[in-house]
Amino acid sequence: MSSPNNLECQPITTISLQDISNHVIKFIHASDIHLGSHQYENTLRSDDYINAFEEILAKAIDHSVNFVLLGGDVFNSLEMLPGKLTNVIEILNNFKKATSGEIPIIAIEGNHDIRRFSRGVRFSHRDQSWLKLCANLGLIVLLDADLQAPTNLIFKPYDFEKCEGGKIQIKNVVIYGTRYLGEAPVSTLSQIRKAIKKEKGKFNILMQHFGIEGQMANVPGIQLELISPLHHRVDYLALGHFHKQFILEDWIYNPGSSESVCSMDFFLKRGIFLVEVKGREAFSKEVQIIKLKNRNYIWRTLKIRYKFRSKESFYAYLVEHLKIYFKSQDIKNDQSRDNFSFLILKLEGINPFKNKNVNQKEIQKVLIEEFPIIGAKVYQKFKSRVNTIVNYF
Ligand SMILES: [Mn+2]
Image (cartoon, rainbow, N blue to C red; front, side, top):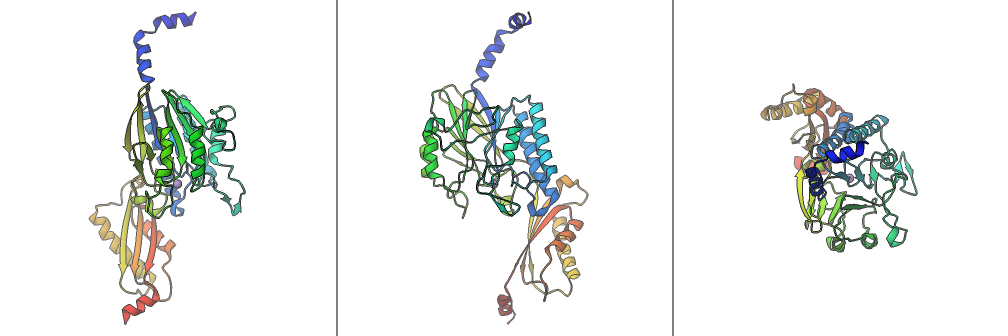
């Protein structure tokens, strides 16, 4: 009884609007979230990674996207504190509820998700991950190919009961993905290329976890010309791995890590992409770069020119130097802890002590007590003894 009534009540305009919206697809592409990371063994800092993940999911809701892509290294390692994992599961559960399960999160495993080591044990296979757990709980779609299978079976459609598969179609977008395939998966890439179907009216996305040579100095990656053949079948290559953001040739996209995972990351361009694909057969694409809030950092270099009688006098000297800097930047102590920065302090020049080394942990404690920071990393780049002697003479 109710359904004919409903049909009668449905205005024609709704149908035509739906028809148009079918040809616009929006998604968020993020990567390298490194959940569970404990940068500099700092507990407060570990929440920043979880906050970044929450921010990404909030943006997915704000922009009413059709799906979210996570290009690997979603977790930092197999070692994860139960409390942090519970947080992540809760966030995923809440997201699923808030979106009535209509915004799937589609992920692949990066090298960090499937590390071979845990608690000093080396595994012979990389076959377990927290992402698998999330997929088995029905909270994400985890894509992986069966590279041993014949070409037409390499990417099986995602099976929501078995929680596995290598591809998933959402409207007219087909998303293919595999786990991390090593530093140089060149031969595997041609296998992947052959297994991807290029069909009229379908926009193909391939999710991979590798870097491209030359995009980060001294970090190995695949040569761009070896990836180019993929473009015949792939409209959008969704990468993860390099923590620095890059876009190449209008089809290769790497958002960079969501938070900085090592000190160098603080200086890199990083964020997420909000992508809109329009069209039925010929597609047009708009990619917006979104910068996440992220923890602020302060980088200071201090040259030590003389030796100190006691560690107390050295610490007092450090605090004095930094106080001047904090004052000059108008950074006040009374702000909320959410706004506290992370301090990276590089000590250069000569070792301030005659017969001992600087105690990192003690300095960190002094600095955290004195300044509005959540943590501090102190690098010591003192001249070697030989150099010091040369300087003195
Ligand atoms: Mn990573």
